[in-house]
Length: 133
Ligand SMILES: [Zn+2]
Image 1 (cartoon, helix red, strand yellow):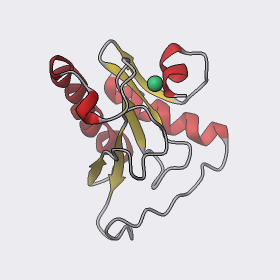
Image 2 (image 1 turned 120 degrees about the vertical axis):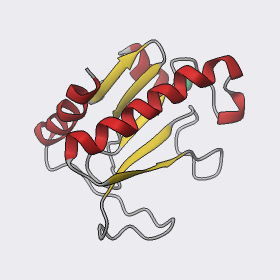
Image 3 (image 1 turned 120 degrees about the horizontal axis):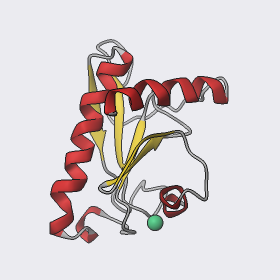
Image 4 (image 1 turned 45 degrees about the vertical axis):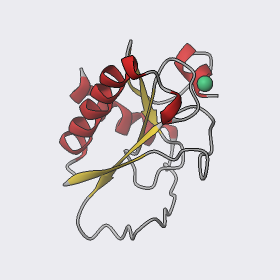
């Protein structure tokens, strides 16, 4: 499924699409503006990613971690990778979740919300994408 997003055959609210990978909105965000960053190469878990790909991939993750608070006015981010357990899609993805003190996120309980409309999701994607431009 994420390979199809990388290939462009499945639509997504993309925030960045570069040789190092693709970032797009999670359709069931913990908080709105929650981005998934995936490598273009199909690998399932972090240990599967070739070491040579680490600097490019995590460089992109770092760019998204910088862009999300700047775009949305959040104070910070939570960054996470599930490997196998709790990994809903078998293609490596790093969660970048906007965080602000008092937002109610506790430990590893991840409440999920929904965008009110495709237009709202597109607006979040556009804000983050503009920081990554
Ligand atoms: Zn894949």
